[in-house]
Length: 198
Image (tube, rainbow, N blue to C red; front, side, top):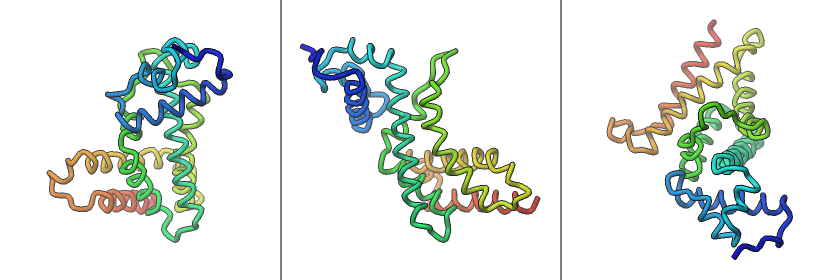
């Protein structure tokens, strides 16, 4: 039986999101169920959809929360003012993905229904991480090339992401690559060096 009057709407949203995030971390996107979230918090599935609107919106909220935690972890590393900030970005990507594999993969496993756009609030949460990368790329480019930072950052994130996926799925092991993170960093350094020469 649901505890329909135990929490305010804001409290319910926080409760559902926290439990949904825990479940996603445990079982990954393929095993995720809004019904299981409802069961764990003692509410009906109808309450979940009343608060979030749909299963898709719930997953979007969970994935956006993951982005926020990811961005916070990168900011914390950079706040230590490391000498090689680009290496920290690459290492942070691999570290977060490795430590939070199910949450990380859920970001990429979930697809928006055709014609549906990500709500602006979630878009802003996700943009924070990209903004960190863009700012660090801009720091190492000559000022005259600062306008290239956003496009270059997207490309470099894609490069690191591909290396990370291959590492976590064991593909690089099959290909005989002993240091996927090192290979990703080398490709990033190559791209940045080429950009600085333009």
